[in-house]
Image (cartoon, rainbow, N blue to C red; front, side):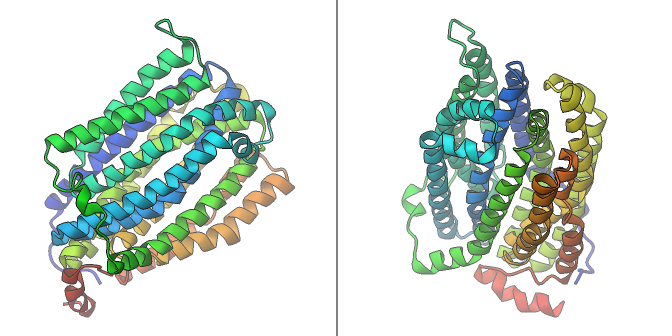
Length: 464
């Protein structure tokens, strides 16, 4: 049900830019830091690149474990921000932070105490396992720090303080690059630590980034981040509503995380050249996702805020436009990545067969990402508006009945090439896109959690 009112494009694009650009820059910085890390580690050898890349897949599993709470936090905080409900904002943040940190501590314990078991799960290559174990033992201490930083970023972005997390990322990346140079190669009189130096640099850089965020938030007198006494004053109604909305998101992220782990188990048993190429690709994938995250956050905040305030027609009008803006931006980034693939892959240590595989991965992903990010933006929009079920069911269903069986069969049974196995990872995206578009334009995904939003819902349904 599209509104017939003239859409305020200038104001809309300005609001998108205010949120999307700082978030995109923040993620671009992080990706740039990861690319520099990869270039430094690549000088140690392709085995080291592959080992650190597989360790990153374990942290991606942690990401899946806590991202459901990020989605829930953005849903509640953005809607309460639209309604200017301070108690709701503070308590939603406290609940989100507690749940996220529980996941981070659990994964940190696995990484530091049981790294051998983790690496055996992801690959059967002994040399890669040994290097990965030495990396995980140290980098596991950074997991709670990363997640604490992410929780603060959720609060700050949803309350439209997007520059503070950006500055925190600048500090994190700069410190990480400098410390990598010092600790990996043993400059300034320190011993060369190799991949263990990269892990230690990650821990110290995360501490620095958190300090910058807290300092800037304090200086800017952020009204919610330091209201610690209010963060944990939960009641049964809030907890019940929170987990009712978050449960589908959590279930989605956990099942998708487990599914991705199974896919990575298959990819981790490819030749060593392919494992190194995949590690480099994952870094470059972060570049695309970094741009996407800006639009995704804009969609969640700009739509969720208006739903919470009761401006449901405006929320709907913003939502479908954000999906196409996101896809346009992602398409441009993918074209640029293909055009510049040769110097980028060369700088990241790819040559011969590894270079060929890495370029093939980029080409496949460039096509898939255009549709994939459209699906992702729509799902984040649905969640921010209160519908955490539809996109969740589709994603889980198609991953487990289509993607995982095909990836497993092509990789483990038929022993197909790495590029064929990789292409199967995205075979469900076009089908889901069509179904998500139908749901988007029906508008039934608008399900407010605030009194203001609920009061406006009947009028919105009537199309008035």
